[in-house]
Image (cartoon, rainbow, N blue to C red; front, side, top):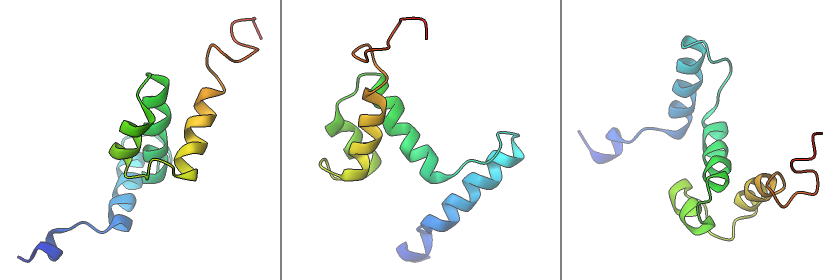
Length: 86
């Protein structure tokens, strides 16, 4: 079998993730959601943006990665509404 034949097509991987999530009763899940969720969760856990970019396949200065990280950073302890009971 050639190396090309062994590679999974991104669309096929995404389809399998969606199908398996539904089968497991997790509702609608996508490969994009898992990738974005990884970035958000990793940042929430205090991981460095460079490491997150490398793991997720983004360029360090990627606009899309930046949006995920800024979204997460807006909900931390430095948020003006943090821990005020709202």
